[in-house]
Image (cartoon, rainbow over the protein chains, first blue to last red):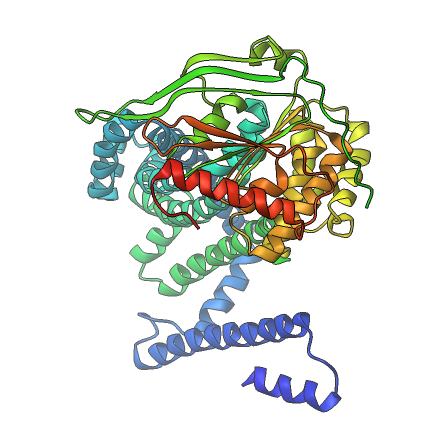
Length: 274
Length: 273
């Protein structure tokens, strides 16, 4: 709808339609659809809140008010900080291990077959079992929590990375070799740019999974962090606070996704835009 | 355009010398493998343009890879001005390659793509802009230096890859069916473009082709190879008497190209276009 009104307005102004006009129109249209989608979500929530007791599903306005009140106090910031640092540590661990596994599986047939079994096991074992086992082995501490959050994500990331490395265009490497580029130059200028999209996708995907895992490990065996708070308020039957804490972290993750990763993506893929 | 008619060559020591080259690709398991080359010998002088013509699978590309130094597992003698390729490369000898596809890195502009090979060939950074501007203007792409490859047509991309090859001022330029992916009119312009930029550098060119007329137009000499397995050189056709710059309408060229087709037909035992 937006795009048709746009076209008619351009036609009325008698201006020629350029490519950037079309791209801008498309962007406006997409933004409008996204806004509508957010409104629909909140609407569904509101309808649910009307039909259920407020102790079970509080209205969005109630939750936002509770969140605003929380943000004025230091406690929630401390919890967010603790959870974020656990996410960072767990992500770093899982990404490093997955990079090593993914690269070796893509580049060596033996490693590919050998680690394949591990990956299949890693995917089939439920995250809950992994986390509980690690808590038993390492103890109820932060080390176990971070490793427990990292471990279930590793196999999925490793598969992603393996596929990305396998997708490197051998013809460009052949070109680099024919012109006698040194190994370092081949790696930095030919391989890295080709695996960058995959690395970025893995980062997004990995952080998204890790943050759910971190909430899980906090809920199961930690006395701090957003996950612990959610568990705590759940035990108190305070759903407003449960949702307020969850919402606070949704905003944090949205910020990371849109502001940080989105910016990196635009910078890396400038060449695709043109 | 300032083509120069090259002085007739005084036979000197050849630059590229291949003697009795055999190449066997190992088979998998019980399969016998593939004999790509069976005793190929050829001599190419510095500054010569030589074509290798033959059906698919006759080992032309294998031969190019051997000269490029990308394939070192062959039997026979291969030397460049009497020394091994490794020695020559250590002494600053440069080899460039033009592939069937442009093989430009899509995330780099034309300028940056050329910078890549200049860095690989250890040219001083201060020389880069001058070299890039020179080769891009020789292939008429100056205006597109800061464009990304995907913004250009296939023909322009291939011209850029020719510019990239000459940017390092190669002693030898190898080309593997460089124009076969383009339509005939674009290919014609590119062949002219190639000879134009070549006249400024005079690198030795060894190219592989499917196209009889193309090899006649470009080459000083054309080698006809027999079909694989066990590709051999069957015949050599000399074209030095056709003066440069050559015209596509030259009847002498047409005559020679017919000779090439006939020779191909004779050695393949089947019809070639």
